[in-house]
Image 1: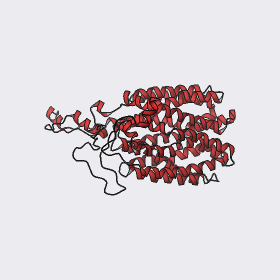
Image 2 (image 1 turned 30 degrees about the vertical axis):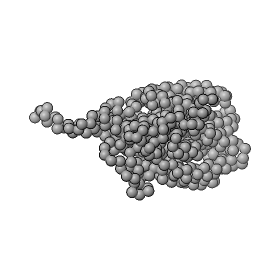
Image 3 (image 1 turned 30 degrees about the horizontal axis):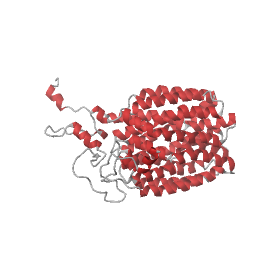
Image 4 (image 1 turned 90 degrees about the vertical axis):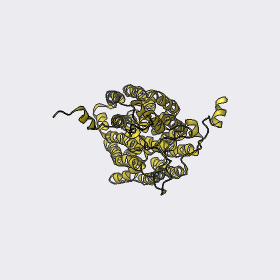
Amino acid sequence: MVPTNESRKGLKTVRIFYGWWIVAAGMAIQTVTGLVFAYGFSAFFIPWRNDFGWSRANLGGVLGLARLEGGIIGPFAGWLIDKYGPRLMMVVGLGMMGLGFIALSRVNSIIMLYVVFLGLLSAGSGFGGRALPVAFANWFIRRRGLVIGLLQTAVGIGGSFVFVLALVIRTYGWRNAAIMAGILIWVVGIPLAFVVKHKPEQMGLLPDGNRPSTDADDPRSLKDRQATTQGTSSSSVGVVDGSSGTSPSKPRFFWGRDPRPEMDLTLWQAMRTPAFWLMALTSALWVAMPSIVTAHIAPFLAEELKMEYVAALAALSFFAVISLPARTGVGFIADYVNVRLLASLVLLSMGVGMFFFSEVRSAALAPMYITFFAIPYGGMLPLTAVLQGYFFGRKYFGTIGGALQFVQLPASVAAPYWVGYVADVLPSGYRVAFKIIAVLLVLASGSILLARRPRPPLPADRVPILIGLISRR
């Protein structure tokens, strides 16, 4: 029997929310860049030292200056992403990164390394790297912690294969490996970037796949409901679950998720809140961790424990693998609990874990010490973006994120170079540096607890006094 038009109307077509296609494409891109760029730097670190004799401080300084560049272009890149959307910035950024790896194959001096890394690789990452978190934050509100966790998990998946990159370098040389990395970014990353769209409203959708009311008598149009979900920068707010009504009350228990809808603050409003500066302080105390892990963990194991090159990179791969469940798991948990408290506990655990890791004396015990450190490290990675959305909303996510990155500059620039310098000048310098950073992580666990979510009435949407005075000079 052929179904009639009337019977077809009763059939429901199950469609996958487009946001999940963006998540899938973003994870594939992050897996590639995580392998060759985020974790791949360690695979090149040791061959560069062997071929050119460059110091740990000079190599760590590459990442430090990359952080400086990222902080400088961060506000501009965030503004461009908010204005033109993440797709364009991803294509530009991935194109620059691919070209950067090909240029890297021609490097013969530390100056050339700095020029290529800062001019192409870091700049490309700065323009394209912030685009995916912005897109994810716009497409998801209730599941934001989960999807940001998945994004960070993809980086770890790439990192778990860094030992393969080490084998490629050993077999074909680091110059040929760099060319392969650049081509891989172009072939995989750029086509997938075209899957990414800025906001669900551009497709007539709502965040999290929420559907507008199907009631024919509902006087509110889809556009009205989208505006409700987006919120405003003054007194109105975006309803997280897409429903309307009175604002939910505070959580019943201190560990519970705040059910009140998030508000969209402008950059100037955010900078007038204590939450912005406390979050900046917290991030500054821990933001250098990814650079330290990718640049110094493998050399530390190779030099202090006398591990062979591929074995040290395999240990870094193990670190990435162990961190994977926490990246997604903690992101998922963040959607259901007090995210400030969760971040505090994760930072405290990371500080304790890094302290114990700095005491590892045997290669046989290295996996156990790595586990203590890697789990909380992986858990913290998605929480920065989740905290930003929790405090300031999604409308100006890219711009505010870029400003936070700029404020974190002193710590993020100095840390990679400083760790390398301490390792150069002190006996067991890596161990000393790691212990100091462990203390800073414990301090960060306290600072995030002091931050409070902004509530109405919101600060004035004008340039803060200090910035206004500086701009007039």
